[in-house]
Image 1 (cartoon, one colour):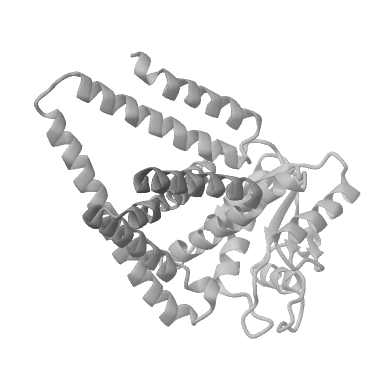
Image 2: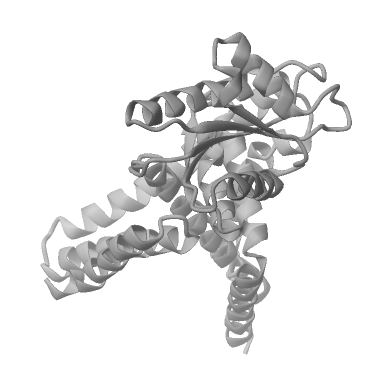
Length: 335
């Protein structure tokens, strides 16, 4: 059972870290490492047992992985086409297409290197390590974001902060933002049933193509749905998620220095918003509202890309190390 000790230790570290602060990307990485160690221990036990079925299981796992890559690539291609038809040609809405093409390029590179066995291609194929690295981080992100979205917010809160998004036609709340507002009302009702009287903050400034600040349109939408106007506070200066949280935090601290809050956004955005909330030292967790299924893959890729940018220094160091490893492999083969 010692082969499972690293996995058990990592799961213990994960549990302690989540209890202390769940809004950390390192939690996602520890989760991924724990799962990898558990799988490695399982495979080691299988091979070490000397069972005749071990090779069959190994080849089955490899075949399953190949099929999974094929299915994922087809799914991303189809989703990219659907996003193109529904959301237009905005680069941020087309991330699934480049992702699918990148997978095909890496697979083609590795297959060519394995077939030709030339030093240059073998060295280039080592760059597949970059693909493995980013794939590992992406799986960590998706799995932990799913887990984070299902952790309960147990504390009573003084404020509910609903993050804004773009308006349709410069003044109309779109379905995506309406979903956030609906979730915000639900959270507000839950907190009120616990005996509190939280204030709901609509957060969002005025974009260059908008007739009024997003927060005002959001407040008007809530009032039209029957939400009490006197329980709404507007934050109308922000232009991005970080400013949403910073400016809302200033409003809450001015009203109650010991505040607690719940932040509401869409489910694909919840974990990154939580990371940002931790960075700006906001005292509260983030919950998500439902998102259209076709929109989720591209939106998730966009969030993951933004997180990579947020942690660009550590990612740059890892990429340099991986590339140097590839160069070393190429040099050893060439000699």
